[in-house]
Amino acid sequence: QVQLVESGGGLVQTGGSLRLSCAASGRTFSSYAMGWFRQAPGKEREFVAAISRTGGSTYYADSVKGRFAISRDNAKNTVYLQMNRLKPEDTAVYYCAADSGGILTSVPERYDYWGQGTQVTVSS
Image (tube, rainbow, N blue to C red; front, side):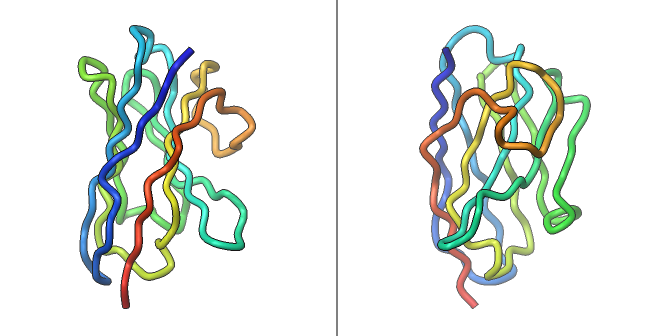
């Protein structure tokens, strides 16, 4: 069992930056691939980024490639999402998720554990 708690969301102007954190409980964090997803009002949950167990591989949605960066610190049981050059269309609740299969994937059904989310609002 893994419990995930996101933090770092907030209100930012267009072009600004935020760094989200996701702290995981348990001693097996390094055995999970991790992902970030987002969901805007009235829309389906959307893949944002994923990172492998060791952090050596990453995978991004086209919409955030070059602006967002996912990273992890296995010693701190934490995964991060650095978001730069934010746009109003990035406004959403952001969720982190853990995949015990360890495969980088954009498919939300492949993830076993989810956090409760943190709100990111980008004003125009």
